Image (cartoon, rainbow, N blue to C red; front, side, top):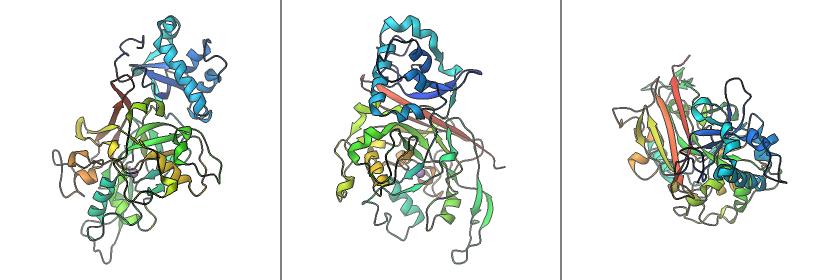
Length: 406
Ligand code: MN
């Protein structure tokens, strides 16, 4: 039980403790830890002295404008830090010294929590891949022949990953006008008419790996520090025109939103669940020990209304398999690498993770007659998971508002 007012029993109790980067007024950005409705000034508390004993110098590691240095210290340090946070925030003996260093979350300015090194997006939901195949390629098999053998992915644009709350300007690009001839398509350039979202989960790499040394699935928790919900904003008309044969390019590179809070894997120990089942069994280098999945419940909120509840537990490929696949050719990992699950869609219509699927390519408007995003729309992703204390922990929310094209 935390002594922090109203933290005990909340979705930000001692079993959560996500990390972010915050500032107040003109103070420099530094690492903060969320507890209840407060941000703990992590380097200031660490500088009080008293623990973590002979361990790493956390006061220095956290007095930085990103989590990267802390992430690079590796899993043993992450464990020491978490044990120390539980001690400091869980025992009243520390209250008198630490309470003045708690900032109400509403008073804090949150920053992008880590410098994104490389960004990769996958395509791990069987239901999403099947839906997209049926919508985009109705006359072909929904799944490409490689889909059940490897987690399909592409390299995205790290420099346009933004923190929750950042506005997103409607992108322009090449698209086909409605009714364009299939035989002789004539593109035009203009603002996307099919701006969409993808509800995903992103995984943040802490420990790097050397080039030439694949990372096995068993080393997932040594390399991956934590998770964030992620919105892979997508322009479907741009995507449909550009994606053959090299995959998405400008349709997705204009913005990707992550949470201000990175939830450590350690907080998800009670959310582990078996994968829904893989047939055929993956090749040996992609084999996993179960439970390799995560029971994380997402919500897509459009202008204040919940329009979908995608279940992460339904994902076919696990994050350990994504990591093993993306390094299986010897590609190295860097601290700050971000890889995302791909759109999370469940079996039911109200579990689909994109507006493309919710409106079935725009042919079946949902809710109050919506298909794609309009200027002024606000989309928020929320996510929760079972916590170690018996309740549910919250992952940091991911929100963004659409601005008109420039
Ligand atoms: Mn995506």
